[in-house]
Amino acid sequence: MDLRKILNIEHPIIMAPMFLVSNVKMVKAAIDSGITGVIPALNFRTIEELRDALTELNATHKTYGINLIVNKSNYKLHKQLETCCEFRVPFIITSLGSPKEVIEKCRPLGIKVFCDVSDMNYADKTVRYNPDALIAVLKNAGGHCGILSDEEFIPALCKKYPNIPVISAGGVGDAAGIQRMMSLGACGVSIGSIFIASEESDVSQEYKNACVQYGEKDIVLTTKLSGVPCTVINTPYVQKIGTQQTWLEKILNSNRLLKKWFKILVYRKGMNQLEKAAFSATYKNVWCAGKTIEYVHSIRSIKEIVSTLIAK
Image (cartoon, rainbow, N blue to C red; front, side, top):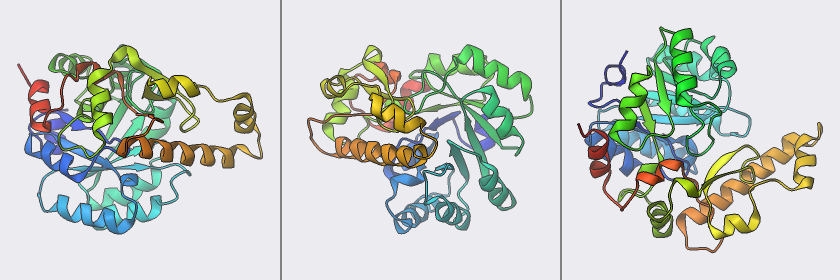
């Protein structure tokens, strides 16, 4: 199984969905470079904006994807899914929940569904619905990362589910990294952080510069943004506010009656904080990125970035 055949692309690479960062320009540039790209549906404030984006992407007549958050925090899910089905999006990536509804509605339409999984238990539950591929979210992934290394997770998934393609997500920033994941059994790779500092990205110059100036050692895990571990650049502001929830936040997060509402509050507050930092100059710099910014040495076009990933 090869991602190139599954998605009809030249190189087995997905430009990963990145909250706030991914946009239509980036995906079109990825398509023109022989790979494909995915945009989180939540990057569009309204369904009308999502519809406009899908109209533009469908006009390419090429493969692209949309990422859907499928847990209760995403109150827009049903309308987003309905819209993706209407436009026959080529493939969907599900994250942070059960893909059951997405697969049931997409399969009859010929829409492929790839599912993020972060451990074997999650994979076991997901496989019940017969996804088109599993995306192994590794512990060195950017954003909401997994808990297992590539050596642990990818071969285990391939052995247990030999008929389901496995795509690796996390820790790849060059051609050698892609070959490593393929040698472990992955059919392709999902790569995100090295594309943040691209010319086609709409994030602030400060965010892009940070991806150039900081490196692997500057990436830390924080639970302050969404309540679950998320990787960010360890800026002076992040150092100031800390990366762990306070004692009061931990109590509220474990209270049986309050934890649902507290998690929603934390998530929305954290996402608003990320959005402000991503698009404007502010001292409250909380920038999401993974360890592969170690491979980012300048701001380049997506075509140039892809050329380094496919170099022989």
